[in-house]
Amino acid sequence: MQYVYSFILLFHGLIHLLGFVKAFNLAEINQLPQSISKPIGILWFLTFLLFLITFLAYLKSYKFWFIIAIVAVIISQIIIIIFWKYAKFGTIANIIILVVSIFSLGKYQFNNMVSNETTQVLQHIQTKNHTIISEKDILHLPEIIQTWLRNSGVIGKEISQSIRLKQIGKMRTKPENKWMPFTATQIFNVEKPAFVWNTQVEAMPFISLYGRDKLYLEQGSMLIKLGALIPVVNDAENPQINSGAMIRFLAEICWFPSAALNNYIVWETLDKTSAKATLTVNGESVSGIFKFSKEGHIISFEAKRFYGGNTNSKLETWHVKMTSYKTFNNIKIPNKSSVSWKLKEGDFNWLKLEILELERNIIKD
Picture (cartoon, helix red, strand yellow):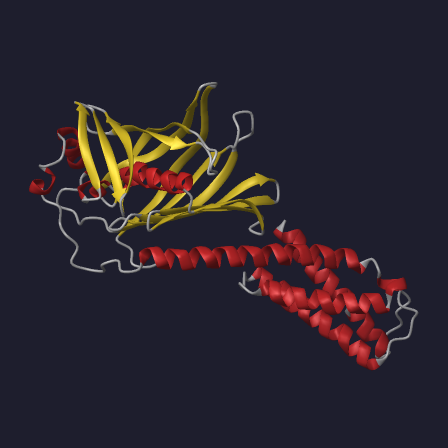
């Protein structure tokens, strides 16, 4: 697709040289029998230069290439209207270039929003003198949680205050729908529970969904845009979304086990291999149950969560199954997970993900 679009930019730009050549009598141009004045010929040449610059900027992934493209399309279409009889088919190329440019503008704005929110989430993160976790720091916790923390390798390591993850996986919106591959980046503030999850989902060939899930100051927000431009889902700051985002944070502490030591989580022993965790932020609480193997590996997390983000959503059982483990920065975590809704009509497995990279105690995106 990139090569096709590059070819359109270059070829369409070169065609504009014909008007310049015609205006200055540099060669006979039979395709343009209409006379062209020299000032208009210069305009044709200017348009060629703009498309050439766009072509080079696009190949080099210059972040503002689409602005040059939009200006080039506007001038080009004015010329086409003037010479409509002979140049009207150039409108097709302009439409293609304009549509791609507008969606690229949307992607830039979406990514800029995510970057600003990430900066907000990571503000006030301590940059040095992190606490080193000792054996005595975990003794007040349920025995199975102590076993998990020892097994994960956090003893003797710095406590995690911020995390950056890179993920891949696949998801679907309904049990009968096809799986859609995705890539994602997620930033956590572990000291003050918050995160920003940014994903690109391949919905169909050449069409992507861009999503952002966020928790900040116990307020949740979910935004999904088609092509980073057209809103498909935009739910924010209602009890269902807030609760769902907090439950997600609680489940995902499996990737930064030292979070279990923070005062915002209260643990309750259920049996030898399971414990209930209650997360409280600014007076709002959610709970979920972690289950472990005898060796201290997390094998699942389960909680009651709203199925959907609107006010009519009902509580259903949300289940995360850990399927594989890997060591990142000398700490062992679940690197592969499968997420399902346990509905009355049957289990709906909607997400499978894998952690590719993990960085601890980052201070900025």
